[in-house]
Length: 561
Image 1 (cartoon, rainbow, N blue to C red):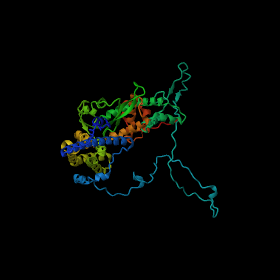
Image 2: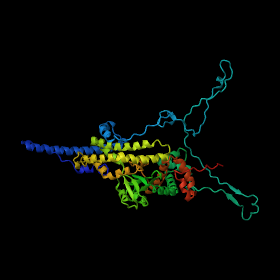
Image 3: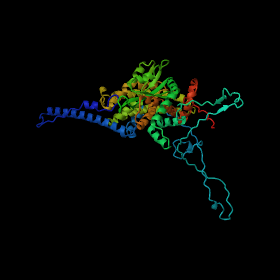
Image 4: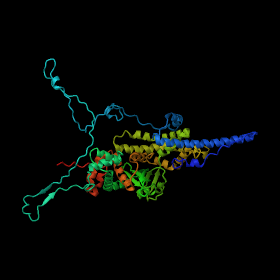
């Protein structure tokens, strides 16, 4: 594996192990010559073992990526081997206060309970009455008609498939009959109701259908050709090229609001970012694809917008352009992976003072991937990292007692900073000393080009940035926020496989932004988009912030004719 994390066999094949010579009989007779021969054979065998171990490691990684699970779990029995070390390093860890005993929670209030949950009260109830047959209503003893004394009600969740309907937009017109005769020459004075602007003027699709297509593709990951077949089941023939044009028109209509979200994200003091590749049809070479990139920028707790950006390549121009001027008025923090394209931002080329915050999850992944070639060293590294995450869990436990979300967040920030300074800083110093002791340059057993050696080198190269999180309670220990957000791209990529063009990438970035931000604020993306697409064309620009997902209030439903 190369230092940038790519899985290739090039470096291994370029430096093959020295072949073992075939010695014809007779073999050397003197002892010194035999010892020299044995040493040469052992050296060749050691080189071969290293080559096999490295190739086996790469093969295991490739097989795990294709067929294995993505969860980075390790056998707890292996961590038990380092139980003594964990106990020695964490003797002074403060324990969270014991929870105050409370009344036992009911089945409905237990989020992870195993009982059947009560159905939401806001769902429509459609009664289906099962009555006793008329012949059984008279009493068999005396013949008197039985009296209805009550009902036994049980509830089952049912489903009605979605259906299309034609929305008739009726503009009522009025005329003054008294003035009609007098206005014979100029014509009657007629007034008609104004029709609200549409996101696609003279288009067939109403906002409800547009919102359905957006959510289906960018949240539920249904390609447009599948949506084409779904609409065919309703006897509606709409080609995917048409729905593709709809998506582009919706993105254009929503772009002013998207630009406002970008500006708000850039007001964040702490920003999380990551990127992922996507195949794009290459118009210059028909039948082939090129690689584009989706970037995500997740704002901090005071600016909770999640913005996607698309670039035709992974060049440094993408983040440099997006973050241009960020941090000019105050120091800010950018949490990302070790991609070299961010280096210019940290050097101030984007015009701001930006501090790099590295990701311990990335470093942990390097050590985890090396477990197949050096299980003992890998497990011990994971044990050190586990201690750092234990501190984060302790801070969360101490802040969990606050009922008010703002008070809980403030306490979490304060407890993080305190515990990190008390516990994480000394543990990081011990962790670094152990990493250096493992390196062959310091007399340790780990060779530089081995998977474990590369994991250690990656961690030490990022060490200063890996320690920045301990200086501020607002910072996270890892960049999992943006990685989790990018999973929607990976899931969608497995379904729609590629983008049709770079313009399609820009359209997808806008629509992914709204879907992801809605889900971050637990807003129904369909209801939000249907309402916003109805209103945005005629909404005042100076009140555009009212339509952001975290501030959105649905408009009153107009009365039907």
